[in-house]
Image (cartoon, rainbow, N blue to C red; front, side, top):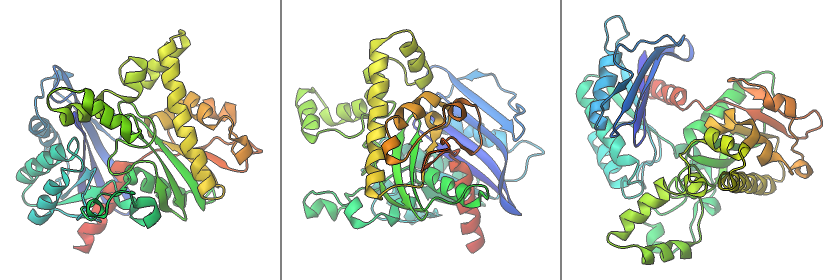
Length: 398
């Protein structure tokens, strides 16, 4: 079976074509449309060996997600490429009604529309993408895979907000996100024969969005994100957890449509970009720190401090851990962030080997010092691959 995976964001659409059959799904092609709605957009399309298959200009104009989908459809429909037999989508928030990955029907689309109230900056765009793709591929099944499903195993004490019952009955609870990333990490570690599977682990998914998750026996027991992907640790453009009184204060200071303005600020204009005064790029912020930029230095310090607090609290929650796992763009590639987050945790049994930490690599690897009681690992987040795994399972079940 050939499965097309669509992983869409607010201004980009990543896509991959997987082949299934023997063993785990295997990526054949992948690409990305970035800068949707901006002055300049880019389109990339490569095969599994990294060869460029894009015959369009490097910079193009893509005004809407529908325009972007047109590029994706044209790319994967080229002569000689395998025929798409199923389509899977990463959907951030399923809302209160949907609690498992499933084939998309009219009823599921209606439930997703109701879920927009929980994720107004994420779900509307993916609903547009799904409808457009269903019109382009009407003869295949389409499947939604949710970022929250992995966290369904969290106990009630971890999911319940201390707010009036009527809101909890409307679906207000802690859902957790980056679940597809966490699940892909668990599966990779289960398949890794050289490393014993960690019974208790903390997964730090650190990228533009960041979360930390506590996992016992491969199941989520707590995580930093809550009702939306805005809370938890400090992120690229999101502040993480805030005093509710601060949110009320900000509302009182704003003019016009305060809710929309505050929502934009908390999702796009806060976090590292607000602290550093720089674009959302950890590499550039690190370079500014090296030049002595005080704002950039404070931004990095606040970021690593927030992640360290989350990691430490989950170690305490589980009575110790067998592994701390880093994933995501920052977690996989920024050695300084890993070092600064773990610095001072030696008393909790976590020590990192500086030489191993500084070495480059894209595969699963161990970074812990020889005396460390806890394994320190880097494991690539494979969300698209995880979606392909679920789609293959659902398609064969159907």
